[in-house]
Image (cartoon, rainbow, N blue to C red):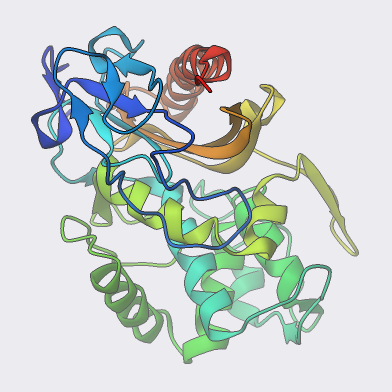
Length: 328
């Protein structure tokens, strides 16, 4: 059953400001640095619209954000404090957003360098049997054929192949159940205390999370340059399969560099996104999660709603951040 749209804004930390942008007073995580994001240490001067110790600190008021009316959402400028949220942050099915955790765990267990294909992995009969079974999102893997680790990650994240995700899980841990235990441990390490993982692909409605928890994962996952390359790809060509197109059409929006779509009738439309913005002379990473859009309808209707509401949200925030000025 779909959530009733929440009409109130939940403001993290009790503050109305979404983002404090003050080039000198905020220790920003520079895009691609891999540094741990940290909260702003400077205090905002009461009533000034500035951050104490800086010349100017433009503030975006969270109450003016173009939030989706449906489901739950969260946005965060990495390095500028806690996320801003809308809607009740209770766990809901996340469908194929699950694959971000799958890819993240695989790359932690089996690191790759940019451009490196990694080990060859043989597709087992189960992966081939699952092709086009049960109406799932799958890719045409052939039993006995080998694919590189990089190719299977691409097939997992770009066209959202459920069978590719489960094949990676079996390759890593011997069984999907054993791999799920790793997913759960990683979620606990990241502080995702409102998330439950029960499979590697997201087909299970028991895999659930919140928008805020998904931002915790996105923040960590986007530190990996290989994952960043893959989720920013509009399409790839895999030998034996051919060209595959990214399900995330938000990549056509200027600045957007990922991350992942997910949809089903119970989950509705879900989108975890990342956008590079230029503000205060620095390129920074803006993250967002939009969950449970048009739940209870069709997967197509849900993902269309998630993509369109995210496009408005990204465009509005990117333009406001890019036009912000810091004094000298």
